[in-house]
Amino acid sequence: MLSVLERIRRARWGGLWMVLVLLVAPLALSGCGVGAEKVPETRYFVVDYSVPTSINAGPIVPVVVGVDNFRSDAVYRTEKIVFRKVPYEVNFYPYERWGARPDEIVTDRMIDHLLATKRFREVVRAASGVPSDYLVRGRVKRFEEDGISNKYFADAQIEISLIYRRTGQVLLQRRLSRREVAASKPPGGFVDAMARNLKGLLGQAAAQIGQAVSKHQRQMAKRP
Image (cartoon, rainbow, N blue to C red):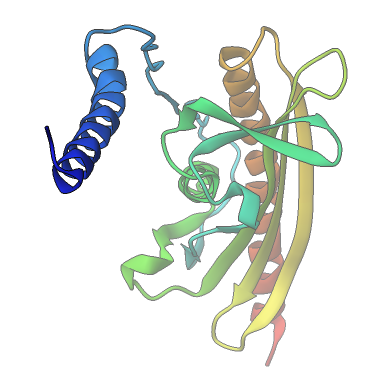
């Protein structure tokens, strides 16, 4: 007969083996593909469009315009694509991403649009350290898919400011908004709509910046 101490020892080992079996069994099943689901592949999208060069730009203003890295509201500081089904709630696509954050996309495209105006001697990225006469700063306020209605829209809103670096004077300060309806279902239709949206929105911003620089240069020329 087993002693009381031996029976207790065997009972403890038997309980430990039962716990190990319960832990290992799910891992073995998942390794065999039982109950396992294939994770969808993450897809990345870019805002790609050509910026036409201005034909009637007029005389080039002999100044250097620097573009600071745009900032963005907290919800857009991610590569995840933001969408909205109701006005008071934002959501993120789980497996669809932008190729870069919206603030990075808008910064790059803003430089493209300013270069295409052909109105300045040079357009540079402020982070490069190249001295500039004027500085463009901006913030992304909205960059999302709007599916609140029975249609899908690409919504974008930015703030821009133009600063004369020698004095720190703010020459221009605007908040620009635009939306474009998607021709097909998201995410592809939405990405195409956002490209059209930014092309119009940043084209408008570049034109206003060009006008403000030219106006300031004329005022400077009149001063004694």
